[in-house]
Amino acid sequence: AQFATDPAQVKPLLPPPHAKLDRRGPALVEWCRGFLGGFGLASGAASAHLPAEAEEILGDLGMIAGTRLAGDDDETSFDEVLAFVQTAVALLHRHVQAAQRAAARSVH
Image (cartoon, rainbow, N blue to C red; front, side, top):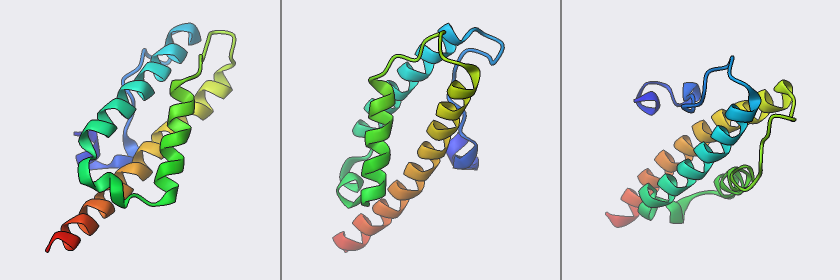
């Protein structure tokens, strides 16, 4: 539903901001893992038409998904990673929509 209204405002479902970083950090990592899994399943033929920037974004999200954000990280670092994830997801959404249009044109 968030993608339908405004992809730039997508907010990952995470523990609330007042929760400790040792809960929010791992939750963001898990969210990225789930997003990448869902993206891989849902992107279908559009993934063949994604530009290099989208591939780079997917790689960056993969790096986050493979890390360990822990409570010893600071709030600013977490907020920066979260902002990156939100921006990356919005950009990917735009790229996938463009790729789906390109795939549809190539079929006809």
